[in-house]
Image (cartoon, rainbow over all chains, first blue to last red; front, side, top):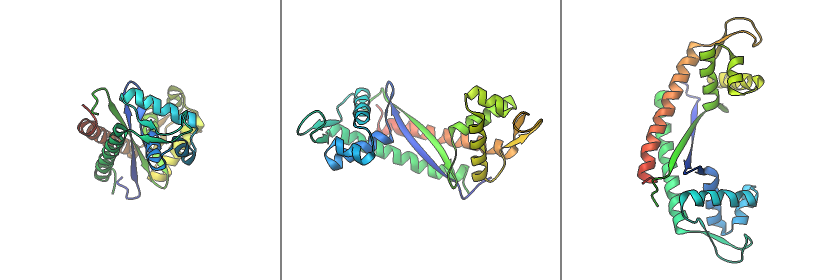
Length: 114
Length: 114
């Protein structure tokens, strides 16, 4: 049964009262950090601005802290930066994801791989 | 930032040439094992029979062995049982999934939990 052609893919999601953080919002925040704009981030991800706004609000409500600082303009027209809490959480999330993936890759070879 | 209200959820999927095995096909096979019928399994899961057939074919092609034995009748009208290879693989998949989840739960508390 062991098969050298198989590999695994792991995804981790975080729940508070509801699902609040996963690969999509993590990527969105990383792009905001690079582009300094939520709107530009949504365009790069081909994501509706209203959807991006909603997933950020859900994440903020469940995490208990704001993720974005508006730096200029308003109502989404201006720039945006990650709050320090958002940067810390994002780094911790990526560290967690990487740890789980490394463990999964090793364990996959033991249990299911060749 | 640590937050006692947060928890993680991990999903593992297996790829050959393409995505071939994950929670959906695992549950489908477990129900076939219980119900001795692919059709009954799809009804319980509210899954189209054509979809179930397709995901089983994709899994078989990528894994390299048959998953189902037809035991009576034909063309999906009869009963079905898991092959021994399918039973072995399903158990290994669940063991792998459980190992990754246990590790993720522990690591989540360390990195992101309270």
